[in-house]
Structures are given as C-alpha cells and as structure tokens.
Length: 321
Image (cartoon, rainbow, N blue to C red; front, side, top):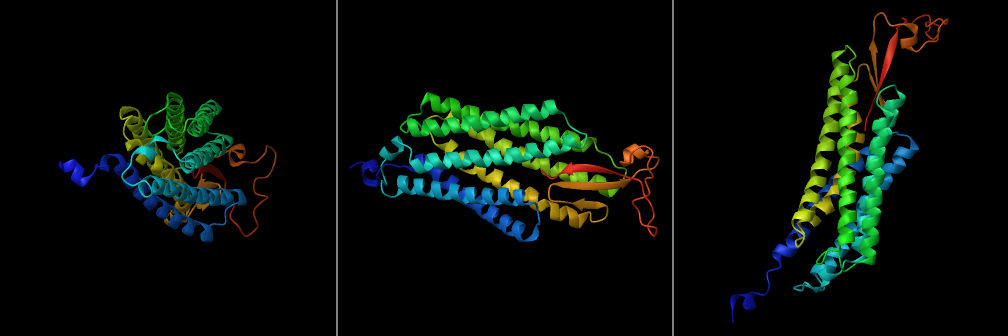
C-alpha cells in the first residue's frame, strides 16, 4: 500500500484558502459588530443613516451565515471528496448577491458625500458622474455574477464558465476604479481647503488620512482578488479575498462613522460634527458680506444678541465619508 492510499488524498491546497479566508472573515465580522455596538447608542444621526448602518450590519451577518452554510456543505457531509466543488451552492450564490449590495451601499454613500461637497462649492459634477458610472457598472457586474452563478452553477468553482469570468472581472474592476477615483477626488478637495487655523487644518489632515487608508485598503484587496482570480483559475485562492472584501467595506463604513467622535474629542474647539457633515468654522479677516453668507444691503450683525461679540465667519463643509 503506497503512502497516498494509507493517508488519503491531501485536500489542504484545495480547501485551505476557503477555510482560512472564512476564519479571517469572522474576525472582520466581529470587528464590525463591535463598531456597530459603539455606533448605535452614541450617535444621534438622521434616520436614513441609522437605517443604512443597520442594513449594513444585517447584510454583513447574513453574508457570514450563508458562507458558513456553504463551507459546511463542502467540508462536512462530503468530507474527503472533491465532487461537491463541481457545483456551487444556492447559499453561496445568495452570498454573492449580499456582497454586491454591501459594496454598492458603501460606495454609494461615499458618492453622496462627494455630492455634498459639490453643493458646498467644491468638486466637479464630471468627476462625480464618472465615479457614479463605475459604481453602477460594478453593481451591474455583480448582479451578472449572481445570475450566472444560478444559471451555470457547475461553472464557478472547479470548471469556470467564461460568462461568469467576464461579469466577475467587470464587477471587481469597476469597483476598484470607483474606490480609486472617489478616494482621489475626496483627497484633492480636502487638500485644497486651508482655513488659517492650525487645529482646523489638523482636522482636515486627519480626514485625509481616514479617506486614504479606507480607499487604499479596499482597493488593495479588490486588486488582489482580481489577480488571484485570473492568474490561478484552477485554484480557490481568490475565494479567500472574495469572502473578506465586503467585510472590509462594512468595517470601514462603521469606522468612518465612529471616527467623528474621536475627531470631536481631539478638536473640540471650533469644530462641530453633525450627522452628515463636519463643519469647520474659522475667523477670516477682511471677508466681504457675500463670503460671510450675507446678502447685499443687509446688516450682518442683526443675528447676534446685544451681549455677543459679532464675528464674520465662513463655513467649510468637509464630508465624513
């Protein structure tokens, strides 16, 4: 009896990426739960933001449950067999749909912040439209992936279908472009804002770091997912990145929401953090009535109480992402 017959077939190279990728995704899910636990009791955001955060948490947990069921199916009832990998489970197809929705929500919220920036007088509609185009393209590619996974369930894991490969590349490639362009656009806006007050400028630099870290992290994983998917078509290394990329979207979504509290604590003076935007008020000498927000021919000091010292100010609106 040879060694292979005595010890069985080594399935480690096949199932190791799935197993360890799922373990890592559970770690990210735990981090998201903790951040959601911190967020909901301590933030009085507008209702639509809280609903969005609740939906993000629910979808993240649903993604983990669907992935767990699929991995159980492949590893427990059919332990030692590669035959089940010939078809993808309905739960895993549903998990792909959930991942597409999570990615779309996270990217859509980022685009919404860019729209707020534009309404405040910064940014470009052309840039926002381009980013929105790639975001819609990524969402459409994700839906195409889900459809092909249900139609060609035998052409996803072990014998990859060409249609699935095309939709997968479209979804992940367009998603990466969305993150890259949105990160660059937001950083360019923040870097051009100068208030003349060191504390306010430090807040802007902190926001830039948050935006860059978020964009670099999710883009890196998206790129690695694409590389492993096309460079190793007979292996499942890409599946580990697939399980974790949407976890990063959910995690960074809550991280950016909770980051407002730390910024408020660090820069309490002159900084007001609201549910949607971060308002930074700085004194400006020699500002005209128009720059201060007053109409021509009106008295800019009528809004102040007699006991208060009038102050001409300007407001810079910086998104929290």
